[in-house]
Length: 298
Length: 134
Image (cartoon, rainbow over all chains, first blue to last red; front, side, top):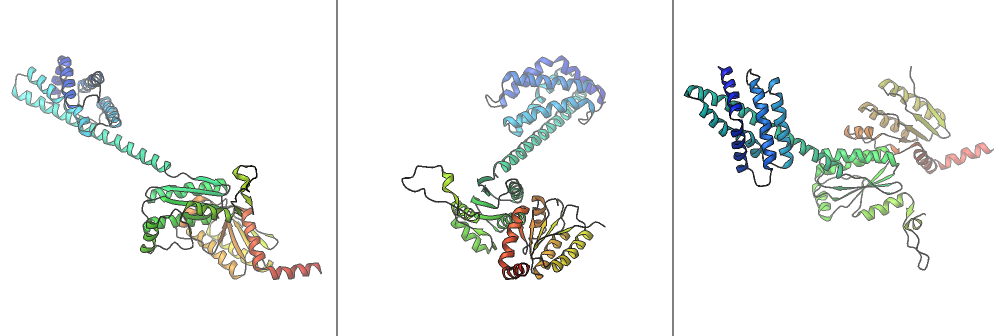
């Protein structure tokens, strides 16, 4: 029963190729917003899909999207969906690409068929194929979107944790955004690695850009401080805003013997004094010198 | 049997862990070090773990124990060159080695020990010096 149906479908696809293509493209252009996709691109994509669909159906066999015959159709749809996900199409719009073939195809089937039973069988087979392809499209679209999101998350994670060198032996880590477990892990690893690379003795964790501090965030911070201490570097936490100071005390967070400062400048001053350095004013009347000589070993 | 050498540098004992630590080596090291501290009357112990890449809770506890024993015998302990991965593991295990001094490298560790030794053992060393000059 299946065999003749697929062969009838291929015949229809062959015979009505041009009208199908034309009607399908018009159908979609009605749905899509103006300028989202050019008509020639859309027509090329439709033609390509019709071609692989014809080939897959022509190969005969059961309609199984996982099988070898349907591999090219799968690949094409995966590629198109991924491209649509990148271009910012909605999921429904992406699925419409396949589903809008239904109307032209059913119309063509109706024209060729004479017998109601055969027509019903044909339409059923066509629906089945198109539905499965549409599901595959949606799947591929979602996968592409998820990959995109993961990629962006990683980018953000790496961007948001720069370790900067303030002076020989002093590192600063300006933290921006909410501190969750995965971010703290990245922060900790980058900071510790930089401590090893630069041989820095003092690291300043600046939390000016951290919107809220709860017990979990405080615990993450303390872990970082302890790990740095284990390696032989001292950590100073700076940039504690008034509200955050209140929250820390209200929550009863025990910061232990960790040194905290209100501003990065205070922390930097303390870091310099730990290294036996200080900042002084250049004497009036003296020739303006670069900043470096003003910092001398006390 | 594998053993980790305990080297003496003046009032300081030097231990460099360059093999994969397993429990027996750690226990032997603890014994050797305790004996060495009492025999030489060491005032400081420097443990270099820069080649140590894997650490477990037992190893973390051994480091804390060694520091504790050394403190009882009036010697300061400095652990130097801990790798980031090791530090993270110890923190995740909840071991903060609170009684142990740490430093980034041997040079800084020695400076720290020298300061600790001269701070706490100045009278004793003055006497030692007097003895040696006589």
